[in-house]
Image 1 (tube, rainbow, N blue to C red):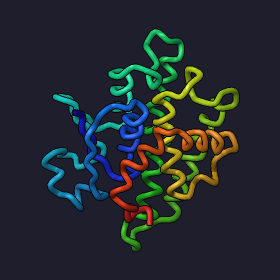
Image 2: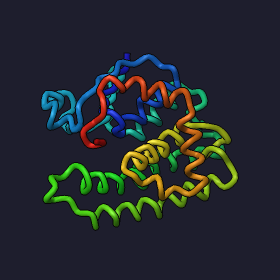
Image 3: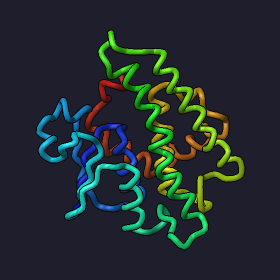
Length: 212
């Protein structure tokens, strides 16, 4: 059975959400955040100490967007866009844009508002990267002008990738920067049964300190 090492609402939520959308069996290993500090034994499993860590037989993966692509291709179904589909390239682009373009700047907001010791926090750096995130979010706004989901006329793994970035933004207080179209899209994603099953699956951990 595949195993997902996960911290509540961390990047690994992408993989957890996908597994619940697919109805695929998996084992969930909940860890406190950050695991490399609060669960040092985890370094023996994943020397990087990062989340997610996904194991499926001999396959071991640490990148959340790549895990989404792996699960979609492996299981097929609605999360996947096949490589002969005209939207395949756009699907791949959104999969990786959700992490590299939308989540990355938010990690700097998180670091300099919540994770660093108080004397090292930097509101100016946090605000600069919040603006960066909001500027990049315009691509999502434009894509939603004529559709409910990003590609293929339906919900796919691309929406999970970008949806996680919106989840993180909401946690960091950046959702006020969403356009009406993005806010409506985020509401649609939160209404999905797979999203709420994923939320329920991680609930045993309680609220992470970085969200308090």
